[in-house]
Length: 198
Image: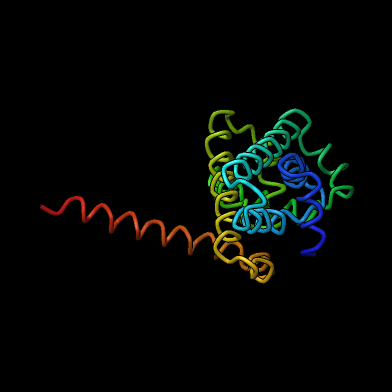
């Protein structure tokens, strides 16, 4: 796997990251987490520029989710049910995501990026449910930002151990998101409390 993504990034660079993530978020079977974490590792080695890798990843993920939202909003469930088997979207996964969207709504557009299988469906469901475009952009693009930055930073920090992290992240993606959110919240509270001290 490492050799494959190494060759892919070397050959296609930022454009490869952008188009891979666009197609991956739409639902094609592309190892998004692997590519993202390796891109962070490549940035640590000086092969890629971190700002450009992030811009490529964020724009690709945002475009993919926007296309999915548009498909869901215009053509809805019938097209998704017909197209699903060709892009790995099963009826069970669709039903699960619909249930989660009914309970958690727009928040799923953020957290869903960290849940393999859900990431590919949350924008479709958002479009099908008639979610307001501005609300969709706010939550979905926030999710794309957090997800892209998280995996790139992990690859940057872990270096040669990046692939081991991906294996765990595929199984525990949601809890990874919760942990990072808690750490970020804790750092924010500490910083704010220090600023408020006389």
